[in-house]
Image (cartoon, rainbow, N blue to C red; front, top):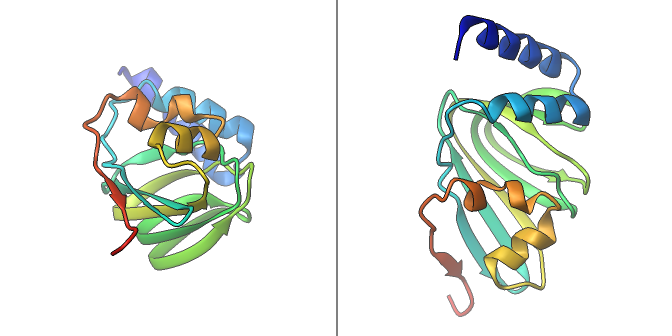
Amino acid sequence: MNAATLEAVSQKVAALFSNPSLEKIDEYEQLMGQMPQVDLQTTHSISGGVYSRTIFIPAGVSLVGATHSKDHINVMCGDITVTTDDGMKRLTGYNVFATKAGMRRVGYAHTDTYWTSVIHTTETEISKIEGDITPDSHKLQTRNLRVASTPINALEGV
């Protein structure tokens, strides 16, 4: 990537972080798509109609999340600056918070960070669950990077 492109990315990031909007997140996603991609090591767990999706975000990685179709809970451990209902916030340590349907996040991990989304679904197959939880399932890393698939943790009977 040349210096002019890096400068354009830097300016977009600064604008996004000062006043995030869905339009700015879409623009940022376009820019991030031109950058080298990182395997976020997605793991899945399913139990009693509840699905959890955990990603590992290495330090120094910026990411753009999918639009959420459903209200759900997030459990985060690490240090990340991320879009929230109240604008950009730096979250450190252990945090549990809600996400409303329609929300889309962008973030930057200052240290290695684990992020788990916990979502109700009646589906039991990962591809169907992904379609149930986001209209952007076609954009998910588990579908686009052809990263090694991780086993599903079926927690029934444990």
